[in-house]
Amino acid sequence: MPKQYDKIISKLQKRPLSHNEFLSLLSEVAGLFGESASELEIIKGSGIPLVFAHDKVYFRPSLTPIKSESFCIIDIETNGHNPLIHRPIEIGAIKFHNGKIIETFESLIFCEEIPEYITKITGINAQMLSNAPKITKVLESFKLFLGDSIFVAHNVNFDYNFLSQSLAHYGFGYLYNTKLCTIELAKKTLQAPRYSLGFLNEFLNIHHQNLHRAFQDTKTTLEVFKICLQNIPTNLYTSKDLLEFIKT
View: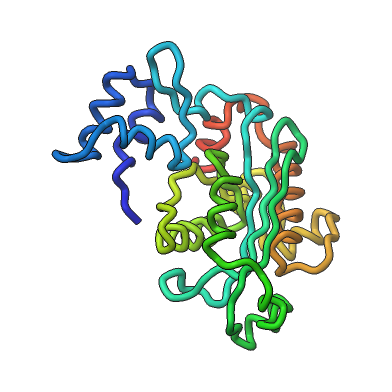
């Protein structure tokens, strides 16, 4: 995945940048024949959580209390495990803010052929997808729904990388949202023999049914996330504190 914004993100995570310094870094990304103004509009839609205020640019998680952060809990089902050759067949997502669900997203995605082993795992077959929306429509709607929220998932790298590759393939650009893994958060906050979503669903007495469907798994992941947040150290205040806590 392209990393053209990595330098900017790294600097913003350490300190706010003046507007001029930010534009200077953007001009490096844009290159000799690019325009900073155009690149500015692109980065605003990239998913990086930015705040523009008082002639400075801030990394929003550095400023935002955990309760006030916009988290988007996500799960996908796919017709295979390789994002370069396979595609999502279902996306579920929940916007979580101030301790409440504020919006949800759920859609099957048209696909002509589903391997038998995928149907056995998910219950999704080709007939169920025959009248589903086309992938370009679903991905466009999903990216607008996600916005610049923090991308939260159980084993986040799979969902994040799969969707990022799919979005780029269909012309919507790669994801640059900040991501948070509930497996890693659970390992830091919960004492459990295992940390798979299915195991935590029972171990934490969540007891949601119909796992391995995207929206249902999203609801289960949200419950795990909420329980984990109840067990984080009291000295964590901003969402950046939370992200750094998971990494330590």
